[in-house]
Amino acid sequence: MRIAGTISSGIGTLTSAISGLLGGLTLVLVIIVIGIYVASEPQLCERGVAWMLPRASRASFYITVCDMAVSLRRLMAGRLLGMLIVGVFTYIMLAVVAPLVGIGTVPMAVLLSILTGLLAFVPNLGALISGVLMVLVGSPAGLKWVFTPPSSTCSSRTSMAMSWCR
Image (cartoon, rainbow, N blue to C red; front, side, top):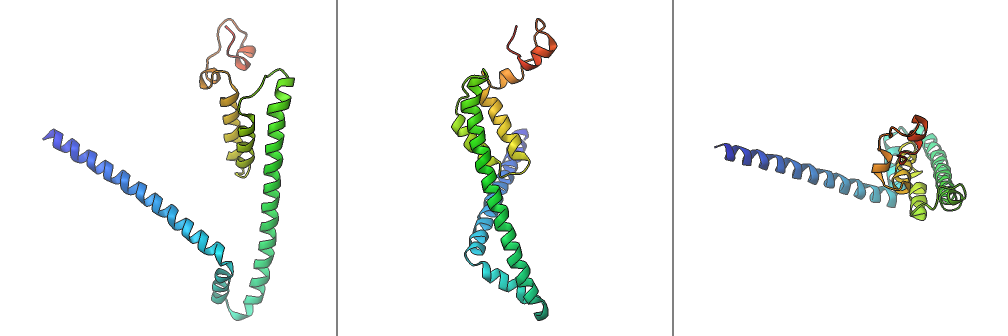
C-alpha cells in the first residue's frame, strides 16, 4: 500500500515537471515565432496600432514612432560600442597587464574577454556574472581557493587577500 502511494506521488511529480518543461519550451517557441513575425514586417504592426487610434492622432503617432526608432537605434549602437570597448579593455587587462603586475597569466583570457563583452549588454547582472567567472577561472584552485577560511598563522588582513598562506 505504501509503495503504491510512493509510486503515484512520484509519477505525479514527474508529470508536473514534464508539463512545466513543455510549457516553458512552448512559451519560448511562441516568443521566437512572434519575434520573427514582427521583425519581418514591422510596418504591419505599426499600421495595426495606428488603426486603433483616432484618425486625427495618427500623424503624431507616426512621428512619435519614427523618433522612438531613431532613439532605439542610437541606444543599440551605443550598447554595441560599449560592449566592444569593455571586451577589448578586459583582454588588455587580462593578457597584458596581469603578467606585468605580478598576477601571472590568466587562463582563457580571450574567452573571458569575449564573455565579458557580451555580458556587458545586460545592465547590472552582466558585470557581476563576468566578475565571478574571472575570479573562478583566474584563481589557482577554483572555488576552494575563494572560500578557504583564513589560517591562524597569517594576519587577518593578509589572510583575507591571500588564503593560500599557512
